[in-house]
Length: 335
Ligand code: Q9C
Ligand code: ZN
Image 1 (cartoon, rainbow, N blue to C red):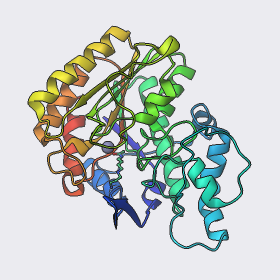
Image 2: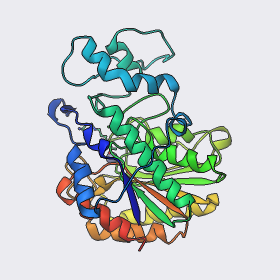
Image 3: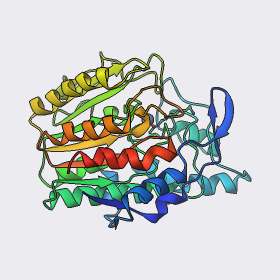
């Protein structure tokens, strides 16, 4: 299948993150992008569809802030990456905040998501990659891959989180709807629950969100992804969470995948967006499932057998040495 990316996606390079209370190297590194390009070949450059399709998902004030956050940080005399440290858990509302720390906290759900010098350019390029892959599929390709990096599924309309700044899967889904395809399914198979994507579509009856992920009682993002979150209002029943225990291998994963695929069929989806994370890999340094490269080929094939036009969007996966081969194996399921 064809794949799309933008060179700017390699320019997002946060220095470090907090892991179990200690600073460590940032797991969502530019090397991930290079490793996937190495395995798949250069692919095609993303086309620039501009800001409008991003504004179909994200709040304009959030986008304006994200774009200037690092410059504001520097202007405040700071070095390194912009990072908040107070979060409005209660009664979050639009406030006329000035200090960069206050504004970072207001637009963040965690401290995994620093804003570095190249963050906006990389996130924007990734969103354009998702739009380019969607454009290829709407133009008649059976499938296309968006090599998104940074990933997207943890961020919502007006907040960043979990290494994510722009929700690439949501942006692609909304672009399909803008071009007349109303019934879309998003299948999220990253190790972590896609809380941002769920949030964006929670009350939307046209977009099914089905996710298989590590049980949030033990894994990020903790507060979302529980099985009793099923959507609301017109979206009631259109969110499906299938949390699985740490240690899950293909024997236990495959039945959950079949359940999710049944839901995609029942939704009557005309188009599928797959949020693919290779952090379910047995060798992933921050995750605890046990899928192998062979399992990724089987997973891809099972999803492809739906026979739906499909856009695959890259999410997580931190075993950099195995990442390219794992992505290639998954995409090979469509061949
Ligand atoms: N270093 C995605 O896979 N964990 N995001 C922070 C461990 C954040 C994962 C603490 C994990 C986010 C797209
Ligand atoms: Zn993940």
